[in-house]
Image (cartoon, rainbow, N blue to C red; front, side, top):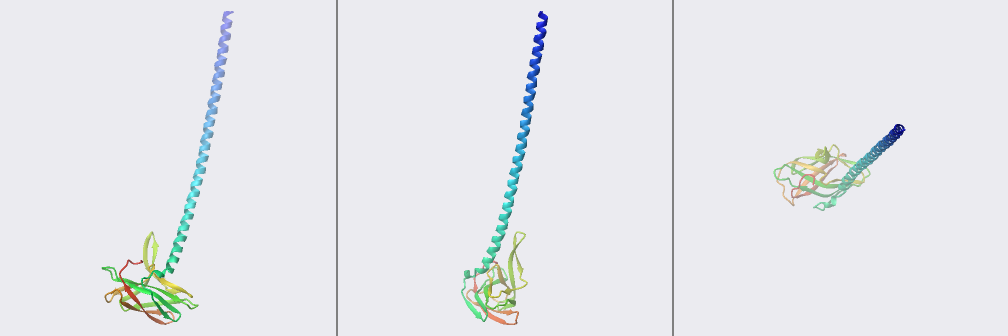
Length: 217
């Protein structure tokens, strides 16, 4: 009888241990599942965050386009700002009016100078300038400044057009380069120029000499 009671106790203890192990394994399984779900949620949140960062990059790109547009607008506005000229003058030649013409003296050690001016065209047709000469330099060229590979470069203009009922401004961004001076530049003196148009007309005008400045300023 005593042996039977011991056997029943052992069976009951074994069942209790088995039940406890089963419950423990089930709980561990649930914990692992919860951890996997949390990892999945974390990955989902990371993807969402990366998507938001991609949107930020897109916004930065759009802002870059805006900067480009602003740069183009600034260049357009710059062409209209000839009122900052140190010289105020008006020389009229029919449909052509030349305003605020002046010459910047060469920098020390340099053999080039700049002619800056504003040319207005009141006619209803574009007018092309085919050439310009001066009595102070051997050569003259029309130049423009532009950005290329993050560097400011200067290049010769292929065509120089005064737009119909508009104006062409040489204010540094565009300028007439005077190459190889034939005499000294004296501030306050006048330089004589002859400008040739595509219809064969020649216009003679002058520009006052000013102290030196950096090209493009």
